[in-house]
Length: 471
Image (cartoon, rainbow, N blue to C red; front, side, top):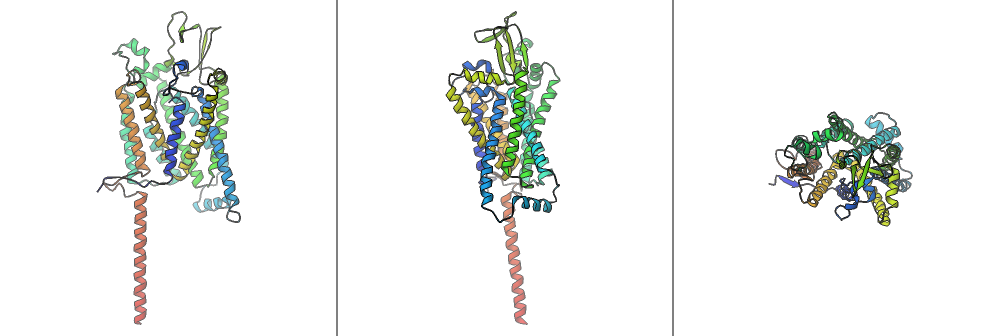
């Protein structure tokens, strides 16, 4: 008897596969989040290719939200066509009212709820992009499943089986322990050997907490960054579960979810674009540019870009001022106007938009037909694959990432993928009763109970018939 088996492949799992592939293509076009704006001229080979918008984080977010709008319009047209074919039958609104009365749901304003959740989820996307742009991960994402499960129990009234408890143990205990170990180890190694001056120059040779304090200039920022990461995934998880609640319990069509989310997100990005264009993150004076390097004019020391919070820069050679931006609307058009591959860049933008339409479609279908936890599979898979590609591209150089850090991070991603596959029952654990609460096993028991009841009823009828015949 096998202790581990492959579960039944449900048709809805195809959405997860499409989401993984689409997100990977987007990550590739984004440059796997490791592109440096000041070093674009040296990043032209296939592995390191990145389009201009890879350096403009807010524009990428705008394309994602625009993809949600277009996907919502597409689903709305299908919805209208379907509703016309159902004339004379019960309407969605009537069905929704009946369901709400039967389930005794609170009479809340669905439109207000959709706007609030759309705002929270849009804010989560923008904040997540900002945190990723700083090129370090201080989020203990392994604890995220605990929050999703809590929300699922409270809002969706979900009951969890033994196999799902295994997933919780793997993520919240084993992987969380690995993350703690990884955070106290340095990510890179420039042979500093404890030299404080060297460690201050190569701040990635420090552990995560010292790195954050050096990058932001104060130890107190450690708690702020950790809070932002936790707050970010809590917003995402709440939005996912609440969106599923609105679709399942309130019968809100998927196109309304996407349209509200898309328009809210686009509006927030435009506001952020206006602010970031006019407010630089940092402004350094008396700078000279020599051999594609930026130096302090009085000391000839090179600018340490690793310590900068924002990665988009604008150098004015007339005033010798170097400004850093999170994103800048004017620099975006300036980059495209100077591009020597404009047609390719335009094609990539169109491709990126199409892919984001597919991403929004698959995500909303996963939420509707599966489980919010299924959304996390693509996250870990893409981090695993992108990190592997970059590690190989850098020839396993310790100055890019140490062997220990790379190994622990990749093991964490693999364990997380396996845990989520157990959760969605693509992997079945056939020992210690861990398969007792699988949907397949519950269905088999229901069929057996129904057959037993049928036989019992049939036997009772036979007994009654025999008694009547005797009489």
